[in-house]
Image (cartoon, rainbow, N blue to C red; front, side, top):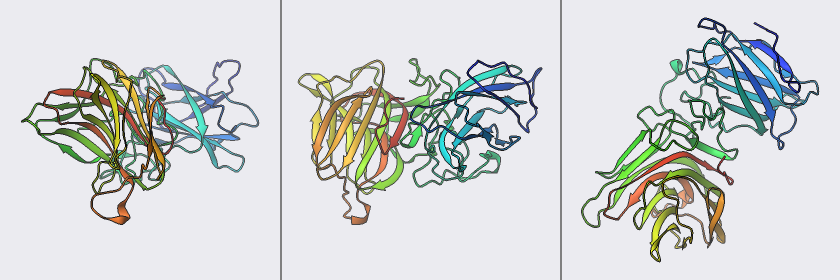
Length: 397
């Protein structure tokens, strides 16, 4: 069904009907404002896809822009608001029909009304680890699944890098939040189903605990859930540990980055660790934690190659902090720590990661780990959210 749209002066109207019946007392529709990031090329046409319980069918071919500049408003009509997780994917196509830019995210729909959302195209394709055309940022169903139809899916994600989940909170507080542009993987815990399907291997040393739950201080992206990790006093010298690991493509050189939001509700002990880039065959890799230095709490970065440094900055307590490790794996490389996207310290030297097994074919970084490890005999806790790994600085978008 097409309909006339009243739009802002700078917008251009295009209306499409979906092969889905609307429910409710009146029609459910969406006005989607498509913008172009300044760094993205101007598209010659747009390809628009939408997903509810599965991919919905659009009437018509890609939309020719005929030289018109973005922003542009697209009207999506006759939508079914009942299936959860309504998602949109917009691809900017060049003159030859190849994808030059993309944007994707969730749009919570209210039944029987005209809904509104804004999406911004950024240069290049979004991460799509299994190559099925559904970006990791919005894919809900496991494996190669071009229609993202969970009723026909089985098993866990099969991507070599594990795939990813989006960073779009379902409550609509920050519509269309996206994985960082350079990300290999991202996880916001909003699609938690009591299993960590995109993570493999974990260590939970009783009585440590791992859960995904709501907290009094809302997660940074405005979502509902974050990972909650606790360690509990045990016998003297007994390490308390709760962590999960995610498979990354094996790299022995170049930049690999890991970012997470960390919430420490109270001052923590000496020698606690939360974020690792490591090797699956043994060895600790590159670690981020906290230590007591000169009587005050400091960030602590160390590598299994013997590099180590503490910061003069004190880790934030009682609020979310965006924490990122950027590792340049070289004989004379660097490890950089960013907190709230400000450079806190740089460690220089041999940053290559090896293993303790003697397996020469399995050197370098191939795992991301998050959690809480402490050798201090105290009960402590932390929350973790919006985790991402990538091949360039990710920042706190």
